[in-house]
Every structure is written in C-alpha cells, then in structure tokens.
Amino acid sequence: MAKLAVLGGNANPALTTQICEQLKIKQTEVFVGRFSEGEIRVHIRENIRGKDVFIVQPTCPPVNDNIMELLILIDAARRASADRITAVLPYYGYARQDRKDQPRVPITAKLVANIIVAAGANRVLTMDLHASQVQGFFDIPVDHLYAINVLAEYFREKQIKDMVVVCPDVGGIKMARAYAKRLGAQLAIVDKRRMSPEKTEVLHILGDVKDKNVVMVDDIIATAGSLIDAAQALKSFGARGIYAAASHGVLSGPAMERIAGCADLLEVIITNSIPLKQPQECSKIKQLSVAPLLAEAIARTHNGESISSLFEEIRN
Image 1 (cartoon, rainbow, N blue to C red):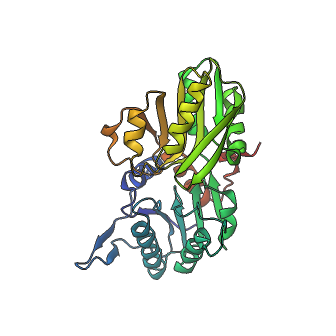
Image 2: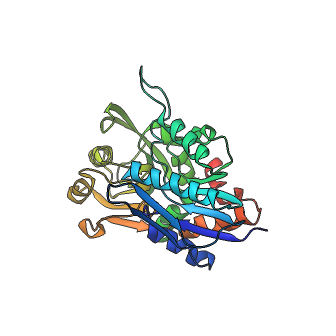
Image 3: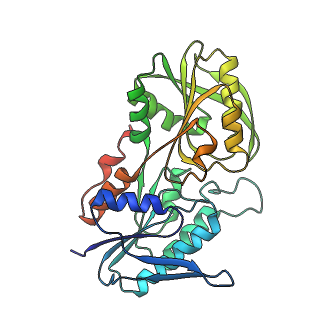
C-alpha cells in the first residue's frame, strides 16, 4: 500500500496541522507563495513519488486564490508522480451556483468540478455541500461528510430544555430533521421569501416555538442577514433562547457586526472548515473542530475501508 502524505495550501493551515496531529503523521512540507507579480508559486519539498496524497484546501475566501492554489498543488503532486491524489475540500466554494435559476447564468459549481478533475485529482473528500447534487458534477469518486455529529454533540452536552430545531428554509428540511432526531427535539420551519442572494423576508413560522429554546441549523452563514431576520421573527413568535449552528462560517461583509449586535441571538456555532479570521470580534461565535472527522475519513480512504458510518445520520 502507498504511504500516506497530507499537505495543504494557505486556505486553512491550522486545520491541516490538526488533521496531521489526529493521524499522528508529519505534515508533508510544501511552500506556497507568490512571485513578485502575484503569480502563485508552489514547491513540494519532500519526495511524494508513489504516495497516497491528500491535499487539504477549502475553497473559502479569497475563493479564487484558494482554488488556484488547489489546482497548482494538484498539478505539482501529479507531476511528482503521486500514486493517488485526493482533494480534501472541507468547504466547497461556488456550490451555491449549482443550477440555472435564470437565463444566461453559468453553473459554476460544475465548472469548478471540471477544473479540479482536469488538474489531476483522483477523488474528492468534502463536507456539507450546499446542494448534494454537486457530488454528481465530478467525474471522479466523491465522499461527502456531514458535520452533524460534531454540532449535535455540542448541543446535547449543553442539555438545553424544551428544544426546537428550526429549519431556515424548506430546502434544509432533511438536514433539520436529522438534527431534531439526533437531539430528540421538535421541528419548525421558517417560511421566507428570498428578495436577493443576500436578502430574505420572513413570512411565517411553521411549528410551535413559543416559550421554546430554538436551535437554527443551516449549512452556511454568509452575511448573516437571513440569520438575523429569522432570529427576530422567532423572537416575535415567542421563542425563549435562540441559538444557531452552521457547518461553514463564511461570515462575509457585515456578518460579524450583525451577529454581535443581535440581542436575540445567544450563540452561533460553526466549524473550522473555514478559518475564523478575527475570533475576538464576536464572543457569541464558537468554533468547533472537524479535524477528527476529516482525519478519520482520510485514514479509512487510505486503508480502503468504508466511510459510510461517518455520514449515515443524515440519510435516515
């Protein structure tokens, strides 16, 4: 069996380090920098010939830079005669552009998948895609993990009474139902209308949240506009304590300020699929590590073992 090698770019070096610590292996040394004019420069400084290589690089902001780093790292590993190359994408950028929802727009999630395959990746390991069908955009094997175990365990340890899991829109019902089942909680749905990619209007709450402690679950928090609107609506419908959980904390634009300034939100839980640039800005935000989950998936993939038990919760 080929020897295991794990390396990463500049997107989330702390997560790469944590994964290697979980696997009890030394991280493969790689230089990822820039030439004077801004071109990305990559040099893998160890021999990876014949190795099973895992490249950890979430395509988070700055999205285009991180995607380009990923592609160049894959190409470098291929030209260094790696036996197999797995792109480990804890967060897959451009996944929200997964269909033609209006005339003359691209399906960028498919375009990025094509480029990753063309660069030389043999398989992909990712987590909580915005749309599950994105798995089918790749012409190589894709292992799709979920952060539900990590996030649900946090709330179970808090022992929150009278809990209701709230789905922020109808598209996330399956995920919310899985959380509700795991936490032994009731389920409610926010009925909203999307005014723009960043703005929504809450119309109604389907379910009983009066005098309940609410946990909103979603895959992404971007500008946090929808999150704040939903929290305010839940409070107006009588919710007692309001928490939020999301797999990916993009937290772009005014997200930090919005969360910090929302008196209705008690806590926002995210994973470290994306690095939290300025954690001191908002004490309400707590980040949980998915390094053990990704490390276990990497180990099982490397050893040719099934990883279905790592994501079976969401399918029931």
